[in-house]
Image 1 (cartoon, rainbow, N blue to C red):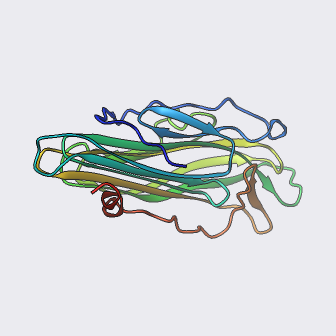
Image 2 (spheres, rainbow, N blue to C red):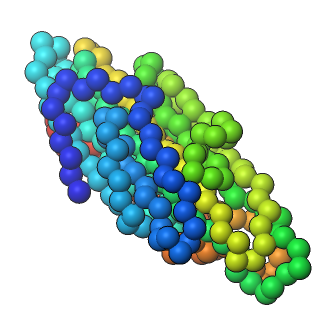
Amino acid sequence: MRIDIACPLAFAFAIALAAAPHMAWGDGCPESYLVLGGVNFPSTASSRDTSGNTSCTTVCPVGCGSGWSASYDLSTGNWFCSSGALGPTGASCATSTHDIFHVTGPTSDTALDFTAILQGSISGSYNTGNGGAAYMDEGPDAFAHGNGVSCGSRCGQPVLLNIQLRHSVGEPFEISTYVGASAEGFCYGDGGANVSASLAFQGLPSGYAVVSCQGFTSSPVVPVRARSWGSLKITYR
């Protein structure tokens, strides 16, 4: 999927987000979103991957253009966003995802305590406006309890988020996740930001696992396929 947006870009990091309505497993998997330039692009697909770029006219010596790459794979629990801008323009991308999970294993008379973990990193170039954020929560709103981390410039920020969960075998629960990156260029240079994250569960007794509507099964985390801001610059220079 490729989406081109005309310049100038006026992307704010406070991207418009959509929270999917709470759904039981029998209703099908909830919608997730790619968010580009504040516009939500919904889908119930388990994985999506998009990139785009645009150029614009300027008197600045470095030129003018922007690029972005955003992806998620709910079956493996991986998210990635990268935005870059050259000259007096900006770019942003985000993923806002939702999936329904349950614990599988031997029937238990009591609920099981375990932890969902979102881990990754945020990186951004030296000038203001180049950074990102990652949030995760139980329920349809990733921002519900402020369980997240963000960085606005000169970022080298780790992502390590936890949710304490308590559920019986077969009981459905929803986890919502947001990952976004924002970039601002300037007349004599460029800016860029990357955010990556991966989901894991820990603390379940032997013989139990977490599975999801979109095909996730709790197992060792598969590293996210990152695309650097440097590779994005090549697409419009």
